[in-house]
Amino acid sequence: NAGELIAEAALALEMAATAEDLRATIHPHPTLSETFWDAAKTLKI
Image 1 (spheres, helix red, strand yellow):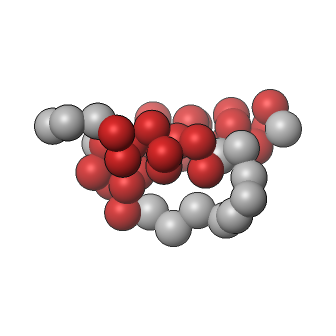
Image 2 (spheres, rainbow, N blue to C red):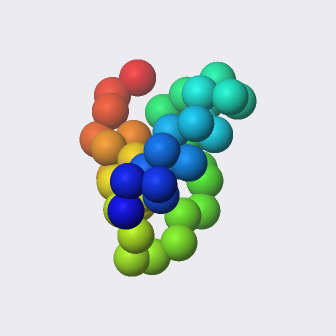
């Protein structure tokens, strides 16, 4: 599970992703990396 989160975070950092980028990304379901998408949905930019 940690590897899944690390891979998602590393990709986001590598591409300098914004919350909007994460929100627009399709994530497999159900996975822990989906929490990045859920968190991005709640941010007000």
